[in-house]
Image (cartoon, chains in turn yellow, cyan):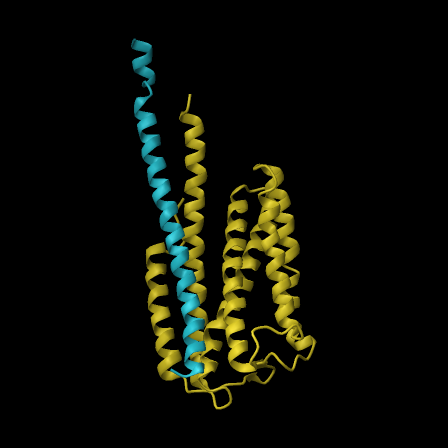
Length: 228
Length: 56
């Protein structure tokens, strides 16, 4: 069977090149925002990180669905890795968001913004995934329970994502409207490159982490087989 | 350095630090896997080969 996935080395170097290009686009090409000034540059890291967190949780849920549908054991580790990375990017979303909030609104956090609160709920929901997973003995039962939990969480993603539009939130800015992105062409290009670079970086992290977890599992099996 | 500069530096700095911490954690895991693989190789070498066992 041939491996059709692109080489991890190529992807890793691609991520490095894209991150470097994104830095140039953000700090050299994109103009300073007339309203927020230099602190608006946080937008280029905060929003792509948040979108990547959603994508990782979505990937974790998709792999969980595949596990429940096909009983394929390999999907358990893939789902777990997706949720794990989603949590890492979730922490980053909350921290960079808090820094941006302090720079723009003068507060680190506000409970009156539905999108912030719903993202926190989504993040805490997936944090509880680990408590559930590690409270059950490894095996098919743990795989199924973890998969069902990861799948339930995916319902929170569209709610969190569209909360700002549904609730007509006036605190959290809406940059992407039906009329298109509310920014200049250079700013939008910088955003797209930054988003692509962080998504690729997350995919590389996913592949590396998954390889590590699989090797760990294989070594455990090998140890059991070799030990008298 | 203005306060806006400091906030931007902090946001990007947090991102870089988290990625570096992830790399460090992975490096530690890789080092553990390398040690465990070495132990398993020794364990496999110490086991008598099936043919040798039958001859003996």
